[in-house]
Image (cartoon, rainbow over all chains, first blue to last red; front, side, top):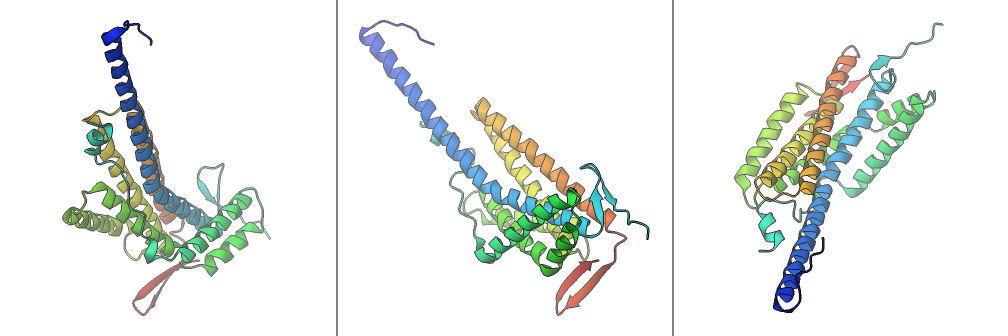
Length: 82
Length: 199
């Protein structure tokens, strides 16, 4: 939003306030970006480990003869009759 | 006061120290990741009905009996990093209490004589629980300070994701126990090390 406050001393003060506010917002945004990246770096290994556990769990079930029915429950695969 | 100073009191993620993976070699980790990647591809093929995929999955699991243990070790390292983040620098007592608490939880969830996979699934439950504590802590401390809508939304989203992961981890362990209950489980003790095999 733009607001005309005139020139002279008053205008100068308003411009300074605007600049300070802009700088504060930029600093805050930069801090928050850094914070998010650091958090992401911290939780990424947890997520990788969880992913690996999930794959090993599914592989164990599949190798034990189970299959996932319509991406839902696990059912034992029927062996074809001889 | 700069925003960084005013926000620092919230115990931000800050410059979290790089994870110390010295307990598990980089080569070992890369190899395990590649094996898991291969398993993921084979699982996709198996889901599409590829008959060759299942014997290959079995073969990989047989050839890499220590795969689950490797990720258990990764989980310990990851948990330590989370604990460091959640506690003040130098607060060794709180860190030790948290480690003991996690150890007790781990033992309780894994149960008696857990198989390596059960142990890994228990680790996943503990790690996701710890993640929930982290995000709840960050969210709560942010609520009492000047948290912006974007920050609040981010933490809320993260919390939701972590809760879903935690529930899915619990479900996986319960399901595995239920489904593989009837499967023969052999326990072998070699020296002081116990190896459980399913098959």
